[in-house]
Image (tube, rainbow, N blue to C red; front, side, top):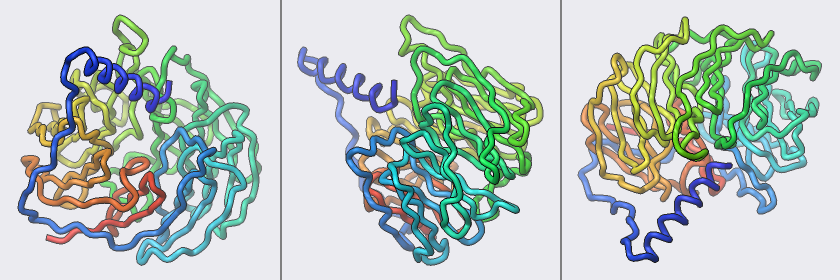
Length: 397
């Protein structure tokens, strides 16, 4: 089951309740406030809307390497853009719709990118924008790949994780985990070492390290070159009276801050683990419905009612909770600058003070809601919208 299918089922249940006399809940109306922070669009680039036949199931998130931004579109292009001013450097058509976002290399592979098309091919593109090779995956892939060293890592829809040599195209390794009956296809993710232009305070991830969020509540720390498992942790345990209630897929990319790895399990829990061992530091039974934003002091996430929560990173205790955005579909929180930023499904970006949740800025996004996670960089926030716009957001104040 895809995340969109699950949301459609929930919406149908709410509509049925409305037909039987129960008032249908309505999203909260945005309240006026006095901004103390100015958010504005520094530049934007039109990446093109997805073709109707693309049917992309994954999420599209821009990545940075050096002084450039790399972005993929569901319609089937990869673009390299100047991070400083948004000027297009090159754009390469892949020849087929893409199913999810893009990976970029570093070190000797800096500027090399990888995407997966709807023909189940891993497409490797040179730093100059030339397609180098197309590698058959041998199965459906719905999530963005990552590149660590000379290895591209993909997670297939049948819960295999595989590593491919980006130079030869050969498969280096593969590992398999059991696939739960129902999963949120395209909603988990992988994390590699942060690139210099990204905002990251953690140095625990090495050049070959890959953290993999898995369906069924499992988190893996792998060596990208060999597939060796450094550790594996069962973060959340499925339970419930039906298969939907037993979905505990880990949402988005794992968050790494200091010596902690923090994850959210769909509708069940939030937890932080030690990066060295994978052992749980703390966990809370909370109905998480978004990825996590983690900084030096706090962990932020949205629940099933679009309440935004702030937990103390040290022990998981609640710092604050706000319900200003009830049922507005909060998604993709990120801690950047002096605020926690979170988008809603209506295409608004909200900035709140990290210490108390007071709203300090709001911005309407050109192109609607984000198509995936918001990428914090030293130049600003990078957001790729569902309408095909790539935006760099800066703030003052």
